[in-house]
Image 1: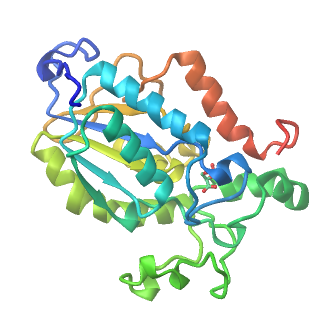
Image 2: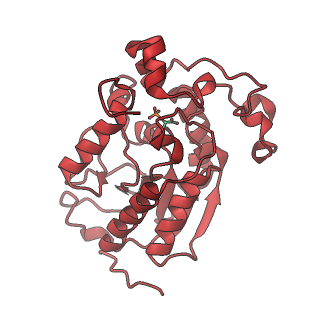
Length: 283
Ligand SMILES: O=C(O)[C@@H](CO)OP(=O)(O)O
């Protein structure tokens, strides 16, 4: 059944500085925990589904959005099922299953190259903390390329048969991810935002980090320490030039706000960073 949604007046959001006027709303959502997140494996374009916890995270994110009364006009996601499943859960729980969903490979996770399928902590044990940190978070140094014989090279997956071979990555750093995300941002997402729509993008940790770097003008250095947790919606209000408005409750360097209490958010962000720290957890 359609849930009733309370749409706050756009021009009078209590979360915005006085005189700031919202033209469009952008909601970014990383998928819930995937089977490979759970196993602590480098994932990238490997197409794995959500765990039960991941589905619950998506449901919690959906509830947080529903509580705030967001009415989604149009939704975008990647070609990977963990993001698609998350989006489906959100639209179902918020009673908005009729929303049009656009899927595009340019919103995929960063392609993890030769690291795809390796355990993050085992990789640290083998190559060292510094090397893995660089591979995970350096802005412009890509991990080693994947072998084109590998089952994880997207060129061997018919889902990507429509993409020219030279555009199918062998490995990507965040800079590469930004460069392949932005053309889609400009061609397909920007027009909806320009028309004042409320847009939901269900994507991935690193494709969202790339969009945030662009939106908030975050430096190459600062982006290395920004983590995006699973299943917590991140809401941006944009002005008519699509510049982000500073929202109260936002944590620098972001001007949008995560729908989570600050302590829970910090803990979730630290957990992402700690996935490649040997002394944390068991996997
Ligand atoms: O493995 C991946 O594809 C990503 C997201 O899960 O991991 P990381 O946070 O290490 O970049």
